[in-house]
Image (cartoon, rainbow, N blue to C red; front, top):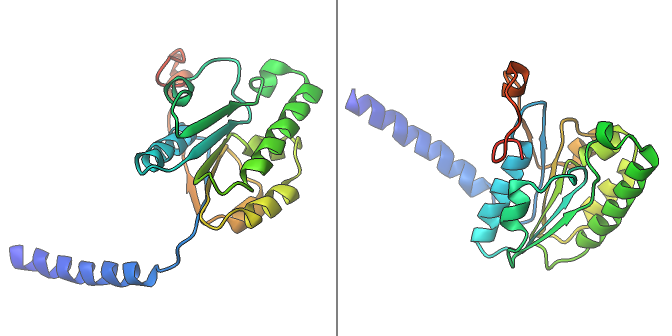
Length: 196
């Protein structure tokens, strides 16, 4: 049994070593975190924390959240390696003001466009940006163009349930967070430290 396991692990190591050797390009990546499940923003901020741990400068733009101070905002807002921008006014069903939402989206995009030209930032998180395309608050074309022209080593993470196809076409990594069950549908109230 032990010899069989060792043989399998030696073979697996050879395969993995070959894949690692073949990955020799060094550049920033575009990561899309999508799907109906809980945890897309949490994943983005976890990855950002990892980046900060390596001394990387980061910035966050929250395109929708804005009414409540989230736990991640409270944690990162004073960190010297993070610039945090809450640009939204809350979810569209809360604001019920399309012109206000479009203005907020355009203001957030203007800032995002500046950050995408600034090589001082190693990682950018555009939280819930995907909704801007779904609701037609922003055009996806200029965003794709800016992402493609960003500094070579800059990493970008975009979150949201759905992703515009042009973003998916240029993404390096796409992860889908699925929803199999959610406490809210079981009647459990949203709580600090879990949902916000």
